[in-house]
View (cartoon, rainbow, N blue to C red):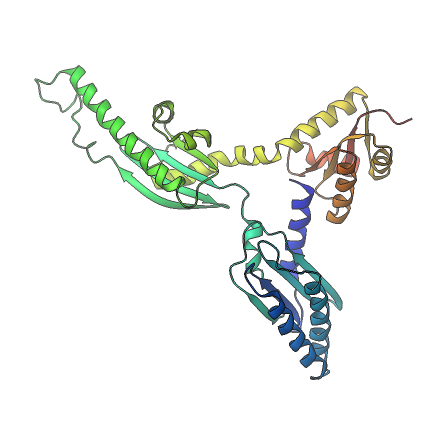
Length: 363
């Protein structure tokens, strides 16, 4: 996880947890195509009305919030590429503001409202996973396709090999049937079904909303047979992130596939932190050039001695962003260490969550 994502996550949690006794928390979400000047004018009018309205606590808080919002909107000449979301209000007698202007996907609807809670619907795009996954469970007689959206498995389609039930086996074949011929016909029908499944996967995962990665599940033999040939579109072969043994029928199998892949997906996201943490602990054990603790890390950054900066996710987001920026200025790497990964909690407790691998020893 990057320090930027850490900061965004903390700000989103703050927005979600904010509440007030009065309807004085202001939410504004501006789509990229919206007229920013028209939005500013609307805020100006409401602010002017609040100045001459009831002077009670609610109106006073609204006036203060709108005054702050006016200043925020004046900082922008145009609406950012994917829109702008701003939250301003008085929470526990303190004026707070949260601005999101680097959104991963465009804001679709204009929102402007006052309530005792912030409207977090516009932030949904911020919390969506950075990668999209296609799920495919395939057996000789049936298959299922779906998507992994966050933690939710969304089925797309199921398929059945209609000729499978008509395929004679050695147990029910006519006496005159040749064993080699039966095997050939079974292989032909299986291959035909696999081709149909591959075509369906191309339509489902390479259409208007293509997936970033593909996960395939089934019995070990079936998965190997299905993915071993070139039947999958080359773009899907390039996005094949892993194959997994799945015992259940298709739709239930989609859920099992997502569960089986979960550890790998998490490991991939945390891999830079895991590798840096392993190198850090090895260096500590071997007495090599490392520092730890807030003051020592600060000193190492001052001397441009840091090669890789490690910060626990428990470090406050603002401080983590500041240290990461200093690391970037000296062209050092930086990673945020989740406490739930192996030795992540130990790093937090033993070293206060601050550590650095050094380019050279500090005298």
